[in-house]
Amino acid sequence: MSSNTNFMLAIENLTVSFDGFKAIEDLNFYMDESELRVIIGPNGAGKTTLLDMICGKTRASEGSIKFRGKELTRMHEHRIVWEGVGRKFQTPSIYEELSVFDNLEASYPRGRSVFGALAFKRDEEVLQRIHEVAEEIQLETRLDDLAGLLSHGQKQWLEIGMLLIQDPKLLMLDEPVAGMSVSEREATAKLLRKISQGRSVIVIEHDMEFVASLGGKVMVLHQGKILAEGDMQSVKQDKRVIDVYLGH
Image 1 (cartoon, rainbow, N blue to C red):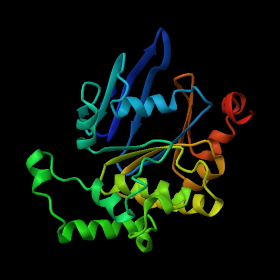
Image 2: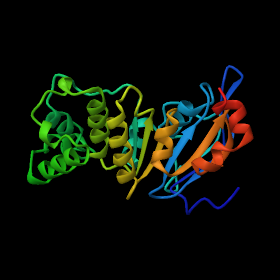
Image 3: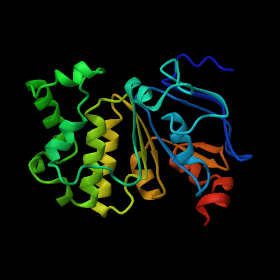
């Protein structure tokens, strides 16, 4: 076991089995504060399962997930969110019949107790935060529009905004640019690079051009294990990665 106190996220000897099949096997993975990490790999490699385990949706069979020194494997999902882990799934889950403003306001953390929620009022601090986030996700001119009227890419940005307003220390995104136009993809890469200044971001992605545009460290998963790690250039030239993934 290494000393994992200096890492924001330290995953050690992580394994999960479904009916004897090991979706993640003896995985060790470390991440620093304000790091942008992209996970690539063939379908069935265990990418989404890994995110499910970090956010508590799937329980580990063995091993440890420490986030800022706290063990997550025995924590409930909502507690993990409180600790500062935000997760975005592949399909955007926004309130289409509400305005962009209302979607962001509904996501604002209203205190950790029932009393906190009751005492919540739309004060200056909340308004300021909503406008800050709206500007960051390029929707400041759309605050009054219904979320259902946004383009596919803008809906994805809104959902990222709904997570940002909770100020997570780790943000996890599953294929954020699937179905986006080229200009939306470029804007998303820029957004994620900006977001990762001050918080850590994990992105699962298949679009290699997008991965390259993010910069950051790339990790290749294959059959629940790490096959290779490094920058995009070195990973792209790794013969094992070409064989199991990029060559297809």
